[in-house]
Amino acid sequence: MNMRSVRYPCNAPIDREELLNRCMGRPDLMDRILSSFQARVDDDIECLIDCIQQGDAEAVAALAHKLKGASLTVSALPLAQVAGQLHALACDSAGPEMNNYAPKLLDEYNRILELLNAGAEGAS
Image 1 (cartoon, rainbow, N blue to C red):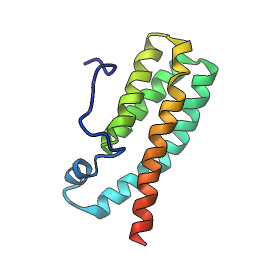
Image 2 (cartoon, one colour):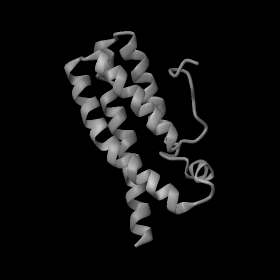
Image 3 (spheres, rainbow, N blue to C red):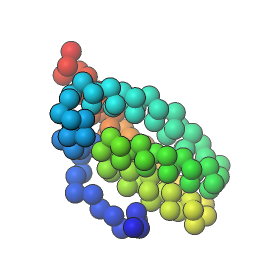
């Protein structure tokens, strides 16, 4: 399957309903998984942006693949799509085109953070 052409039906940063189903209907488990995701991905995004700016296609491919997997695990489908597209470009050694994906990655990740922060404020 070519990730460049895959479109996910959900435009929300995280498909919370799908994730909750994966967590067997347990919101506490979903919250722990999302907290773990955020803790890991914060550093990965930063490192990925650095590698994009350095033009390190091999490192970008590895990190984008890891990010895609982590994103799919938490049903963050738009971020997974961007990471998949970036992974494909990096594997094709399309260095200059990779630069176009740094803002897209940050935009999608910031959407996730906004959603998670809104959820945390609502739980207080």
